[in-house]
Image (cartoon, rainbow, N blue to C red; front, side):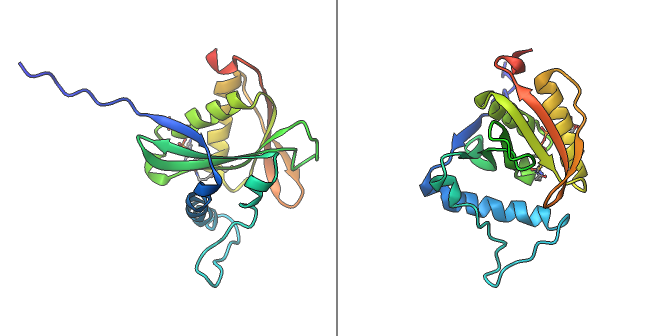
Length: 178
Ligand SMILES: CC(C)(COP(=O)(O)OP(=O)(O)OC[C@H]1O[C@@H](n2cnc3c(N)ncnc32)[C@H](O)[C@@H]1OP(=O)(O)O)[C@@H](O)C(=O)NCCC(=O)NCCS
């Protein structure tokens, strides 16, 4: 009797990006910016790209951490983590500078698994800033953070260069194991 084929388990990797992988991040950032261009005033440059001026800083400044996400051996997104609050200027804060999951991999839990792994790798105080018009991301972060900390979270509305829904919380060692 033949056995039903078992679906292979999804294999998620969150990889610190090397300088050689900068062009891959540059390409993924174009997809990210295109998504954002529906929410914010972003226009293409003469070269047909949105561009991301701060990208080289991720290898020249020690307080910046770029990651690539790989799902079953294929690129599935990126995460940029930065030390220092964009809201208060407080140094002892991890800031979620950018977070992006490729459309084909959305609504499968990849974003949540990635966020939890990143929170685990950077214990301490965190801030996640979301533009209020990015309603799906607000739903996503409220759920991803509360399932990590085990507590409900309500964002604060803050304004500096932008208007933000600000999620502040602490990543405590072992939190995601609850
Ligand atoms: C927001 C984003 C990261 C979510 O990634 P994802 O891998 O699809 O998230 P998950 O599958 O882990 O979603 C977990 C939960 O978040 C919520 N959620 C995720 N996407 C949502 C959407 N589009 N609308 C409403 N709720 C959503 C749901 O509650 C979801 O659970 P469910 O699928 O069981 O309903 C992804 O859509 C993305 O990269 N968007 C573009 C870039 C962006 O906005 N980044 C965040 C900047 S702050």
